[in-house]
Image: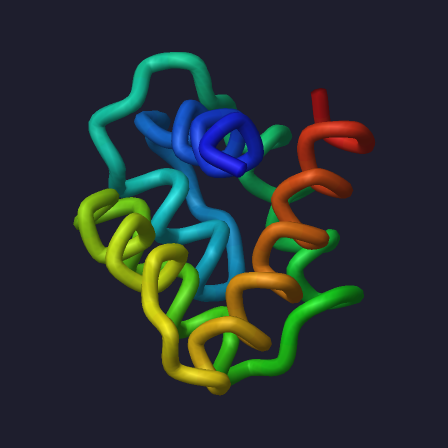
Length: 98
């Protein structure tokens, strides 16, 4: 589970303009491995797999990885559903975007 999160969180830390909340979170994070192309790819995957509300929620994980851990460990049904969708998104982004 943390592998999917780690793969996504490593995607931040670049300059440039990328549309979408996930793409912007990627660009604004302090992670050096990302490029505008990679952040754009991750945003495209988010557009295909997450609702707008889910994207806003997931974007928070770039700024606060502890929040992701809290959601992952939560017993609330809504958090569990979101985490499953987020995990599928993160796995797909890692596979497609590298």
